[in-house]
Image (tube, rainbow, N blue to C red; front, side, top):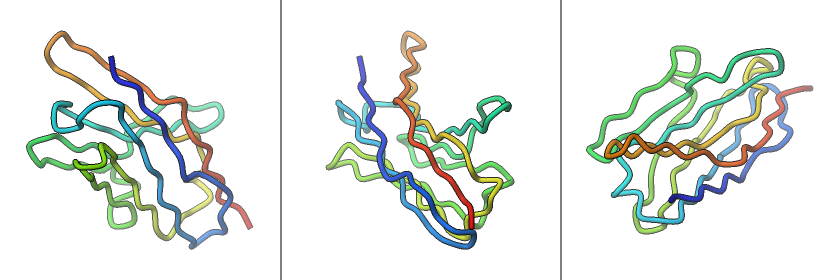
Length: 117
């Protein structure tokens, strides 16, 4: 079992920045893939960024060059640095942990990000 707790969401103006955090209840080096997803009202949940424990990181085309995912293994925490935010980035952002053995997947409770002037 893995508990995930997100934080760092809020209201920001277009062009602004936010950093989301996701604290895991176990060592993230033992979690095959950590990911950030988002879901806007009326839309399906989509992958924003993912990072494996062997160093592979991927981003959705819509956030490339603006968002950066990183991890602090000692703190069991992953981050999503979001720069140059746009109104279309408004969504609830969820942290995800995937453990390939047994096909286990865990979700955080989500944190709201609102980009508006």
